[in-house]
Length: 206
Image (cartoon, rainbow, N blue to C red; front, side, top):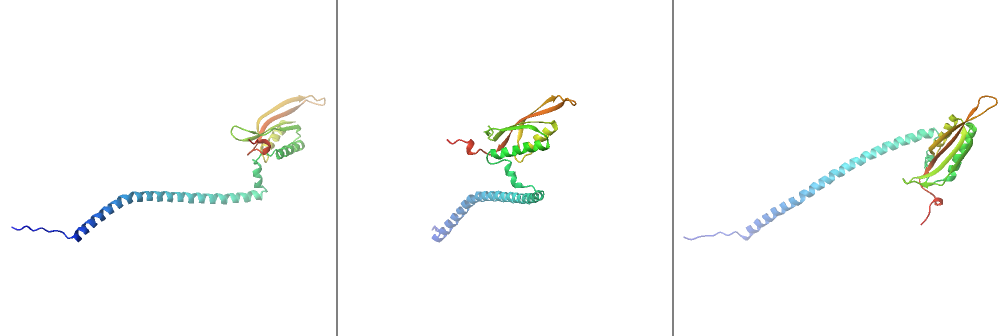
């Protein structure tokens, strides 16, 4: 009996090996690319969400800007100068302007409120533990209780508001020969104005 054997040709072996390598390559690519695609999809979803949020914010800002512009026109029609808002909290203590404003309040109150004996003091500005700059102010005046309340309100409503932290009214009676005694009210108040910072006059260099 004669045994015969068959052998594959070199070309068939090469094709089989090439197909095997191709399959291995595809599997490796699949295992490598799938996580990358998932990360890319996640990043794309986040980018789309951020874009949608930014577009929403832009819409809100545009709407608010239009609203503010309309309000500015209404205020301008009432002769309200928005540029003066910066004077409420100046960059530095601006003591000279503060003197002028307080003196104007004093002079006006003496004329239309009958407030007399008005005095005031402005101390050197200080920096609080919270980092604010405060300019201590003290005020004294004499008049009726009602007029003195209006007097205080003018400080608080000034273009640069003054906050009073202590207000004291002292009442004394003055005898009168022509009629009943009259009450005299003396106001003593202390408070402060604010600024964003100090000028070189109140700062030291190392």
